[in-house]
Image (cartoon, rainbow, N blue to C red; front, side):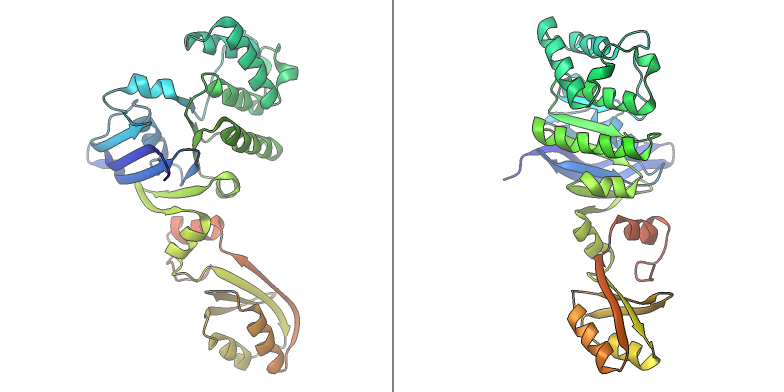
Length: 317
């Protein structure tokens, strides 16, 4: 049975007559990498602040590692490492000195602090910059140092708020890989907040979709697609000639087909399961030449376009 590490039960946060978060219930298990996905202003950061005990919910309960975040926030902070979207370091100190200082604040013995700092600097590929002052660090280097910093006290949970903001694509790939590897190696639970679809999809075990303070769906990408697209989660692309109204009608009549759409390159067929062989056979039987057929499951990009941009869930993208 999975051990629950983060639990939010009917949590709301209200400012005057506006809800930043409304009736949020969410469970995250030990060792899981969970992504909070949503546009800016959706309520992701407000949720994180309530988890850390930095903001009190208007209603509902929040527990982290079995500890009430409202009543015992200091104990929660001892177990959680938090990387905000804009991390700051003492710029006149080196990367190593910053990490050792963090360790001292968390009552780690000096020898142990230095050993762990050197270990983590190696893990985040900053060994060569260990004695460089952080004022000279790039944005990507600071984010990697920030990841090492939140790991210094060996937390049970790490919370990362938009950790890839302002980093170049190569730096993003490196950072995401580090988050994934370190999370698994250190056996920690990771909560990652982002509005970048592909980044969340790359490393998260499950994703929660936030819209205007509401968690509208949660699960892995396949589960989300099934929730939001009535189980028709497979798109088959076909290149064939000629494409006739009769061919489209025959394909539409196939039992597992939800929709057939004419696109510039040919046809896009939305299905409930993979019936590529049946589609190929139908095309040939109708006298058309099949030159290409491929398939893909709906990803977070389709979910984003259909939900966050306010489109009808049954409307084709």
